[in-house]
Structure formats: C-alpha cells, structure tokens
Length: 309
Image (cartoon, rainbow, N blue to C red; front, side):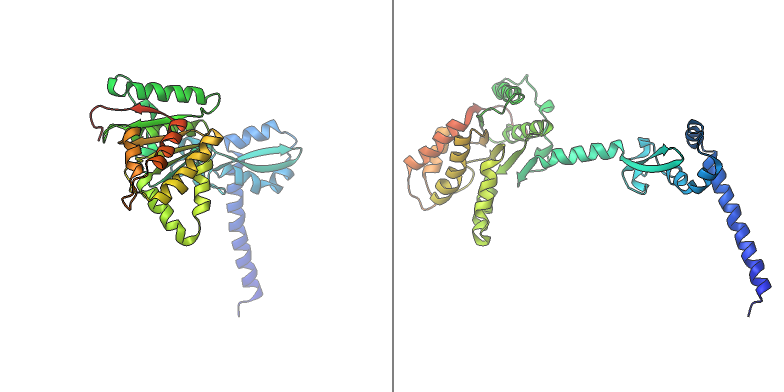
C-alpha cells in the first residue's frame, strides 16, 4: 500500500502541474487582445471577479467569432454550431450569449425560400431556373417574356387573378419559364406549387387507396400560385377531368387565385384531347367547361423558336 507521505507528494506534484496549466491558460486569456479591450472598457472587473468568471472568458475567447471561415469549420465547431458568442458585462457579472452567424442567417433564409416552392415530380434544374437567364432578344419568345414581366410587376402590389397558359412545341422553354416565375415569387415570399401533370394523375390515383385524396386536392386548390406543367400529356379518365381537375380549377377561379399552365396543345387542341376519355367516349361539353375555366384563370401565350434542350 502506498504510504500517506508518497500519496501527498504525488498529489502536490499533480496539483502543481494543474496550477501550471491553469496559470498558462489564464495568461493566454487575459492577454488576448479582444479580452484586453473588454477588461479595459470595464475597470470595475477586479482580479477576484475575473478569476471567479475566468471560465466564461475562456468560453468566449476559445470560440470562432469571425464569419470569414464560417462555411468551412468556423462557427460550425462552436458550442452552438452556427452561432457566435457575444460577451456582455453587467457590473461585475460576465455573461456569454449567442447569436446567429451571418451564414446561418443566409442558410435559414434560403431554406425558408426553398420551402415556398413545392413541387411534384419536377426536375431539379427547373427548380433553380432564373428570370435573369431568360433573354428578351428572342422574337419567338418575346411575348411570353413581356407577359411574365407584367405578371411579376403586378404581383408586387397584389397577385393578379390570371396566370399564363404557355403552349408550343417540345423544348422551347415552357417548363423553364414556370420554374423561373416560381423562383422569382419565392424571392418575394409568395408560395407556389409546380406539378408535372402525368405524375400528378398517377399520384391522385394512388391516393384513393390510402384515403388521402381530399387532403391533397385541397392543397392544390388553395396554394397561392398553382402551376400545371405539360397538361394534355396525360391520359385522364372522365372522373379525374371532372371531379379532380375541374374541382381544382373551379375553386381557384372562384377565389381569384392565379394558375399557370404549360402544354404542347393550344386551348382548342387541348379541348379536343380532354373530350376523349380513356374509355373512348367523346364528351365535348364537359371538356369545354375545363377549357372555359382555364380561360378564366390564365392568358394564352404561344411560345415558338428553337429547342432549348
């Protein structure tokens, strides 16, 4: 068994080592230029106050407070990742609080913006489309650009009741226009939803099994700006045309909510397409009702030109 004297010597040696480390740490903290500035600005902090609260000074001094290296390994390694420490002195009391660093603020703003664009089976590149990349010197797309500018200008005051119905051949940029408009609206804090129609039809059919169809249709009805991409590319039943699509468009028409469309068909061609059901029946009157609602909800704009794909 180790003698009491040997244990005491060992404790004194370890304690001396601890004191050396403590004194070095204290010296490093006190000599830190930023800590020096704080202490000079608060002469009421005497040695006793400083020593008693040295751990708080260490907490502040040891963390990153400069956002220049924040994206890599700066504030992400702080006690609260993405937050910078802030030192406050109240009399002889030292407090450490935390505030969001600028990159956390930017990231949260981007996340909030992204949450404003809801998509259903849309390509990722379309969700990053930009108005800045749409060129106005293309005569084949000039009217579309003019109408987009008009809509966005009016949306600065209040959302117009009518969106746009883009139609034209494959690959001329109709879907890209929808994505660019959605991103511009998100920058303004306006929610939109982009739907690829063929997948939308499949989504609704599958929702019948889990009894979620009413909930999903309500989302499409009530979103601030709805965008239906490639309408007419899908084969739809009379039930979907009348009870789902018709219901959504009717609600939005009555509530004055703008709706955008893209299609390879003109409205007259789309009417013919919608009049033929999956069972081969011809129902021109019911198809005509859908087209009338589209007329009420949007302004037809033809887009031509070379394929952008």
